[in-house]
Length: 493
Ligand code: GLN
Image 1: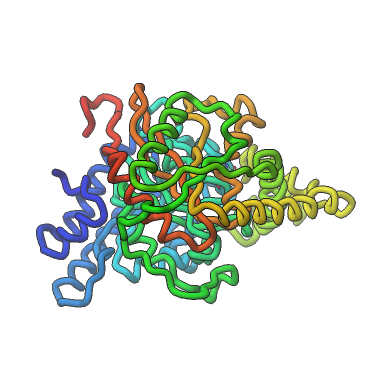
Image 2: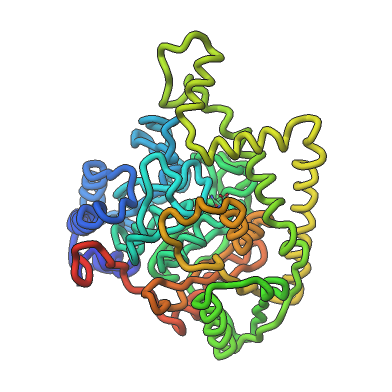
């Protein structure tokens, strides 16, 4: 087995028992990255020099006998909307130019403190707006299982890089599904924590009341490990709060005696055959594991969640993106006639089409004469959605549903029908509206070799229970293999 193929837990074991050094592990992962990148294009920035230096420092700490935890010396990839001090952070937008943040996102600061080593910054849809990783100023990322397909989005680069084993894990962000959907398309596990579980400090904002950082890994136990580091209270993010500390110790009793619900209304919607088969397979596995499968009814969510989410996300996006004016960040036009002209020129040339579309929609939705009718109405529907979930969870422990109605689509297919693209988020975005946790897990491969992922969701703060249920699902459904459908290679690199 090559070093780059190791999952987080085994890599940590190897480093602890001195089978290899952090520098060797980093070099193996970087070589894998270099070999795959021309085909997959998952990264915006590779941090070879910085990562090698951090790996060397990690080896020195270990040699000195310092108390090294599980993340000591482990390479990681961050979605490029996580601020990294001194390392270019673009949110995949031209408007940020070569902006190097003067501070670290808390999530990255926690990983770094635990000894993790930065391998690169991952491609994404610009400002996390999208679900295919095609809407990036740096071009699209390709799905490493089939290069003609998208990896999903917006955290597509992180998912693709983890699936192709550039690093044992990566971080993404999820505003309406951006961790769970690409995890499903790429055949990795992706976890969106409860809103408030992981600090958003230093995450470039899209929809602040919805955004949440979370990990991708190639097995569930690794997600436990990463969450035990990320789930710290942070006074720098007022939405990050803690009633107690959460224990992310893996426990396999996950599903016995539990109730897992299917959503009545969702059963009327069409799913691609492999997704429907995945649902059937998983239902059986859940019953075999000693859980009871029940049904819940979520009529408000089924009918209104998509419109509610897009009204809120676009409204928040338009406010959050007001700061990009050519003065404070990266891209500017030095020869503009005046301030107003500069704003106009910078924003016209700096933002991509999808971002502009959302800024314009968000401006209209919150405009004083219409605000009550649209934005305020959407906040009320959001409350109804949260209440509907809360009632459902009185009678069930988890809800099982798709992460997407389809397998990874072909590159270029998603732009064909805007409404269809937004509607495809129906299964993921209600979770963000209610601030719930959601686990995207692997269920097997379709006949065409593409991974089939589904989603398990739980009530707020049930994060650890959800991951424990994930352990049972992984044991019974099997773990994914490393993606290797790379052009010009026989069976992978
Ligand atoms: N596809 C959704 C959107 O475009 C979700 C994106 C996300 O979670 N960042 O808003």
